[in-house]
Length: 71
Image (cartoon, rainbow, N blue to C red):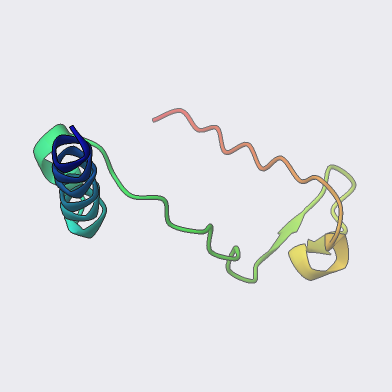
């Protein structure tokens, strides 16, 4: 019986090692790996009063930029 337990433990260890060593194939399951966000590019836009506001001046604040146009 001890030999069976030892053999079973060895099989589980080898299987677990193979699973952990296998590289994840994100494309096969249709998932994309996490990529940290990139910083926004530097830009400046006029506000409603015509004053130029630069994104760098708003660092640390929540910024919502909404572009709307009609063609």
